[in-house]
Each structure stands twice: as C-alpha cells, then as structure tokens.
Image (cartoon, rainbow, N blue to C red):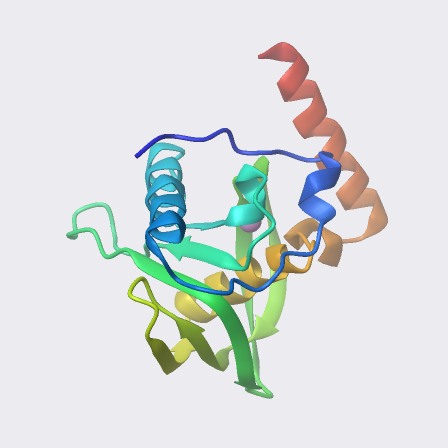
Length: 169
Ligand code: NI
C-alpha cells in the first residue's frame, strides 16, 4: 500500500468525469488499498479515486468514530437508485478543498447500488452521515465539488484560500 498525493482545487483533473470500472480485480483492489491508506493518513472519512488523479468510479469511506474500530467501505460503479424528498443540511468539508467547511443540503436518504471490494453487487439504503458522504463522493465522480453548491462569491473565496495555503506550505 502507498499513500498518494491528494489533488486540491483548482486542479482541473478534479473536474474530470470518472469512467465505470470493467472488473474488480487485484489491480483495482490495490488502488482501493492505496486510497484507503491515503484517506486515513489525511485524515478524512471519504475519498474518490479522481482525488488522487485516477478517473475511475471508485470510492472509499470509513465513518467510524475515532474510538471505534475501523470500518472501511468500498464502492465501485456506485449508482443512486432512489432519493428521499426530505433533505438534510450538513456542514461538509473535502480533502480537495482543505480547511473549508460549509453547509450543503442534500436528500436525507438514498438507495444505492454498487460493487464491493470483492466485486459483489450490493443494494442498500443510506441515511444520515452515510447518505451525505456517499452523495458527496459520487459528485466527485461527475467532477462536482461541494463548493459548487455554494454562491459564486463563497466558492471563489474558498479556492483563493486554498491557493494561498498551498503557496505558504
Ligand atoms: Ni470531497
């Protein structure tokens, strides 16, 4: 396993649309292992492959609290089947937009379908933080960032702040 570099805004690669994966094989599992290690190292709770520059429909996630055992989740070719009418506002952040947090409102419950680490198809419901996180990560696969939901002013300010931090680093 290896820790990869996480791309940050305004890197144009983050705007790329990710492609479906043809087969869940050992090469893909190696990518998922790297993604998980990179996410834990950051640290973060979710990471899409495009954030390390790989335009494949792959997401890793771990929503376990700091004192809980690790609970890694892997999503290949995820699809949202249904979304609830009611929405949940949540203060989101993103490893590609470091140190910026703002509220985004999304459906509070979704049904999703994906392939897991073994390549098995899973259909399940997600709500609460899980629903927020999977929708945020699936947006990455479409080249969409959470700051794209904010006002132009807030978005520009967020990107400027990240650029400034990058220069200072
Ligand atoms: Ni993100």
